[in-house]
Image (cartoon, rainbow, N blue to C red; front, side, top):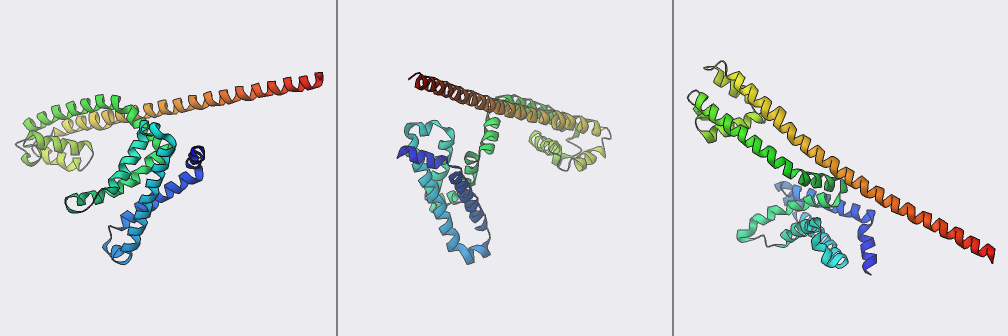
Length: 259
């Protein structure tokens, strides 16, 4: 029975069914944000939401039945169980905010779709390298914010009047949000301010952020290389088994001829 359940859970058709349920549930939760739709189809949306939740719960119970103690060793199983468990918490009174967390069920696509799972695994693998870049970015932002506060605080106090304000303004500049108007406002009294903003944008946007991308791409390459190595080992093992079977068939055929 356990083997049949495991084979059923591993079927591609069942995985596609789960993906369809996740997408349908995400769509219904999105429709609940439209008052007109809720007024007309609110009961139907609630029924679909409950059915999806029960499907997820049955799937988890089946996985626990198949994997037993191994269930909690897989981080993706823990992730799925946590998301489904949140949906069963009471969403009334002081816990009404939990009702909005039902949309987290859409994140189950990360564990069901293999390509998304590889991307998340690569991001987690890249975290150690990214932490060093985050420290570097924070240091550059801090140094630039102190300089901007001292240089342009009196010119534009609403943007550079204090260290926290300067940090927020420079973060906005780093993302490319309205940085031209920020620079022009300062340049009315400091014509050479374009040098500061240009250097800051070059360092933060074109150097540090590209380092983030390089670390993530490198982690994804490592993830793909490991998967290819596993597939190659599997194919080699399968080929060895096939070769041994061929040899056994030859030996059996020779024994039959000898008889």
